[in-house]
Length: 297
Image 1: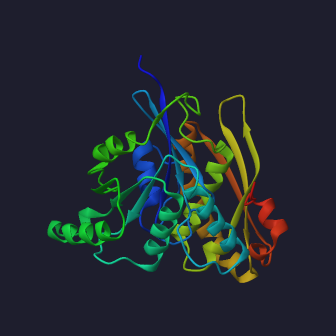
Image 2 (image 1 turned 90 degrees about the vertical axis):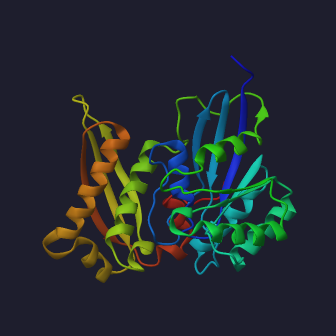
């Protein structure tokens, strides 16, 4: 048995660059919710990956954007704080040979924090390989990255090399979490997030961002079935109608998809009941935000 090591690593990048997909690919289970809509990740989701004697603690930051609401402000603060005090940072970017304003801001943050950083070029399965050299060159000019790695979080290509580079960030010392643990989020929170993911997938445009989930019941019966009751809060009566759908069809579809994922995650049969309630402007109310778990410690 070698000396135990650990590494706290922040994954940052613009919305939709694939941070949650990468987190899930490294962990091998669905921990962060994934959708193609920006602002999917609200809290700093922590995933834990053990490799040999090294434990990696991954902090998945919300995508970097300009805040429009108080929830937006909260999310940007989380990003600022999670680039400080870590052993390393992964800057995840699209395979595009130009640096956007969000990437430039994150690189500036890296300069200030002095944390060692890897540039991870994601989605290489979508572009011609010759283009990658241009992308690498553009980023290498502006910052001295510890390494530049092309990967595909979706297909798994390049992830072994990425883990090997991340290993270099590790420091000797005890592990932060039990070795069989994959996230510090309680099961309830992950189940709520899985339900929210289905809203993002099934509903159009703005509606899902005006939703929050509260699990009002999470109970394991003697027969091993887990009973979950969830309330979906939305901002308008018209949204409520859309979420429920014609004769309840949309809510039924969302609930069915969420239940399947919950069963896979909990490795148990789930009995899920969902309700939809209207709470106007909850995103601009600090009291309601705290109620939904978005508090700054």
